[in-house]
Length: 361
Image (cartoon, rainbow, N blue to C red; front, side):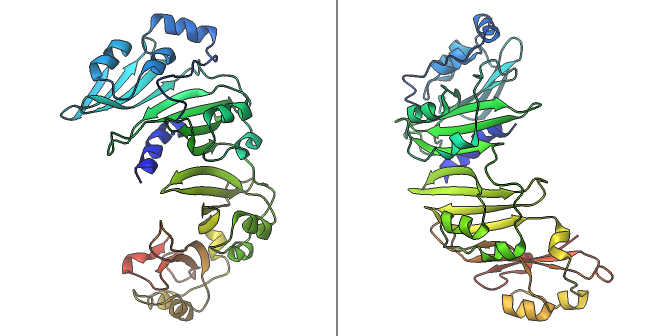
């Protein structure tokens, strides 16, 4: 669980997660002339960032980067610091636990250190958990950019991890990114992407087709049933299992679905469609909705409401989920109800509590 928490922490930089041993940091060839000029006059730069090492003291970090402009104490020997360049175009955020560096991440507001590289879905599709950083660099054809180094604060004696990024600009300000976190041995344990599209956007995922996808299927079976390819959004190693999330998204970006796999076995799915698509063919009365209570089974609810619900999400129990779960949606009769639809969660076939009965507009 701590790895997932740390990934989420690094995701702040991925959305606005690392490399070969930090004792031998890669020297990137991606600095532009303006970036190098920036580095000559500021301590807060990519080159000094590469010399940071997990476990160094606050004084040692200050020696490299200067005095932080923001420093927040979270306890004795625990600090959260931000170091800014003189032009405010680069800043480094660092945390210290017991006065030792536990994480650091660099943000380059002008993108001076990003290497011009073409990032594609075809490259991402070739990456897998356990690959070495050098193998990944060979596939992408570029060195990459070290963006974050971190260590589990709950287990500070464990080796560190390093987030490397490859990015190319879309039209406007957004980027297509491949983000890879590797351990001290340079082996990938997390692979994610931003703004890469691999699914067929002109394909339609209907509720009927979605219902055919069952937990226990492997990826090939899911894609064969759908009749189109899904986009892989991330892969992460957790509890010695490979966790993958694949996504469907149409050209409107309003209709989407996520499919979660553990060791290539589907265990969770959920669909994200506009409310009117769930409720168009249903007309549950307020009187029928008032009969629904905790303890009822899905069969009893369906009988009381007079129609089967639309399946929103389904999860089967495994090493990461202790219960089977289904979430269904029923549309209300718009002429008589003061809410638009019912969203009900069933745990192991029953409504577990009143809190699992949502009346939403």
